[in-house]
Amino acid sequence: MKIFAHRGLNRKAPENTMTAFRLAHEAGVEWMETDVDILGDGTAVILHDSTLDRTTDHSGSMYDLKFSDLSEISAGAKFGDGTRYRHERIPLLTDLLAFLRETHMKCNLEVKSNEAGGAMSRLLIDTVLREIRDVQPEDLFISSFNHVFLYQIHQQRPDLQLACLFTKECLWYDAISRCEQVGATAIHPEDSGLTAEITRRLKDAGLQINVWTVNDPSRARELASWGVDGIFTDIADEMRAALDH
Image 1 (cartoon, rainbow, N blue to C red):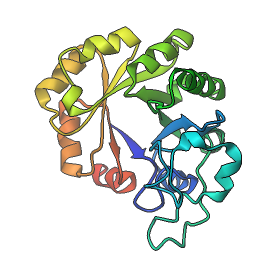
Image 2: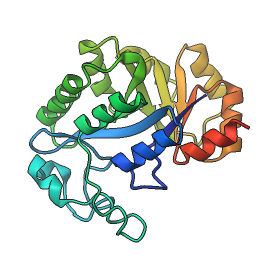
Image 3: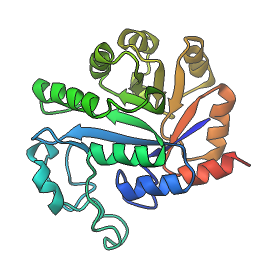
């Protein structure tokens, strides 16, 4: 079963930072998960929220920023005592891709559902596709809650592995149809509420299933027994060790 380091080893370093990703690699984790969106000037960055408030020492919308603003923003000031990682910066997508080339890690890249309008959404898709053009498709999942984005990506890059994200509230009986319509070969459902029956239905449709976010090894073993292909976890290093024994 694949183990994805959810935003890196986010309990040992600030989420979605290069240190969190590097710690996952050093722990022997093969797959990682992270998020991509663009700033107001079109720079593709690794950031989960559309605002800076939760994870940085700044506030406000990421869509108000430009590349030159990043040097002033700490992505680690709110982690732990605020000192050890205060020099961490919001990574660029190009930083992440260089890291993947260096380490040979594999990645699930979640394309965030851009909130800045249609033109910015198209720019996000075009930018991501341009920057990942040299990544081997087997080493990458592109996932999103925005299934329109996935459809548009599939039209341009049918070779990419796409995955539809679903919360428990939206995992209706048409989930398989949605995956088929957008060209997704994988589905990433929320762990809460997922049952063996639902899993069997998804597997019978030929979909890969990677479940988020699973931090209990006993639950991970149960999901594996149902045929789940992978899990996203905040404790990828510990989970890997637990499942190996």
